[in-house]
Image (cartoon, helix red, strand yellow):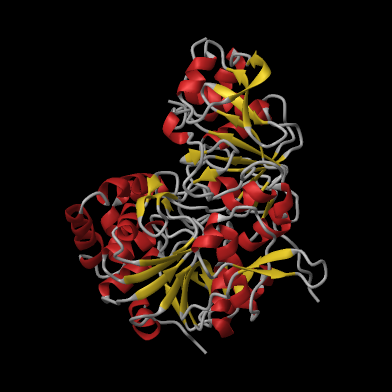
Length: 300
Length: 252
């Protein structure tokens, strides 16, 4: 069954006011195009979870889509502070719930595997455990030593960007694989955006690379360059000047509004956005090919 | 040869690494320190990044923890869950580098909040992976500029554990790693004594004990014999300036 649809339809059908959203991707493959569509559709009161909120949740917060944030590192990677989220927390405009990276990813892993929790060894750091009542201790029945547990994370909807998928939703990723698989299996609904929609035979030619199987996927969208200003390994580079520039953009309400007006509300879709970035940016983010050595699955 | 504070930090951090160490690397100065060590005394260093990259050989300066240059040419890539469990929690990481807004007398680090947690005066990025790195790497090194506001006697929030309140408190906590083995600043190197208290053990060339004390928020314990670190060599500086950070992004 084909699940191919436009990104607009996918968001309309799968992301609702008040949902718990997980937009996956650790630095790599961050689904910015989907977030911009969520902003355009004016979806409200989202609880947004990600290890690194990154610019994607700074943008959603700026646009008034966010009620609560669940995170483990709230910075602009390689630049500094995430100004909009930071201000929202300091001024208590949003609720927040905080973990370490491993705590966050253990919540997702438990959600994805149908477990009540996955125990972690103690780290000796006491403060976050005191600040967040969801972080608890249990006694290991075998050694009587204490382990740390956190509850499963079960998003209403996950959004995952991938290099290639077929129309059924079988999705392949290479490069940094972060937490896309975990996010997809933990969530009730999954939207896949892909740089390329390929024939099922392409997927079947390299099954080890499939990270998400079709039957957990709700919608598949063909959205080239959906990860900008993050990147897609082998397709385009990370736009580091954009990340630096965001530090300036996010300084005042006026400059944030102007940016959203120009680059989100003012464009219909990712295709228009990408063309608007212009040739110079396209050239700057272009990457040269570097193919892996082929492997032999054998003809059985 | 003249050198900057960040060059001094990077060179001294690199010298703490041993050949064949498996290092959990961050971007910025720790990344430069690891690459410098690989170019000098530790050619078999293994660099691991929390984004899930093992054995990275970046051909350009990585500008984020998940830079695509880390992946191309690496020995392995794995999920975030795998990197924290199979690699870090299991005990396969020798060295972790840490930094933070505040570091206290027992090497505890605050990267979360200045002021009260629920009513933050200044909200900082938070743990990321640093809680687990500080807990589970065999050895940790803290790399930081040396200013009084960064070195309070007690931190507002312990994001990652040093030796807690000293007196073996860390050892009874169940954390597997050895904790911070050295704090490298642009003035000096401090190492923990048997109780875990940071102790001034080495000064960088031209720095006095008084200068260190003036920039530290408690009465700093002095080692019986304080040594002076060797100046960055012209070869170390050449590698940093010409090969690793030619645009001076981190080494200004």
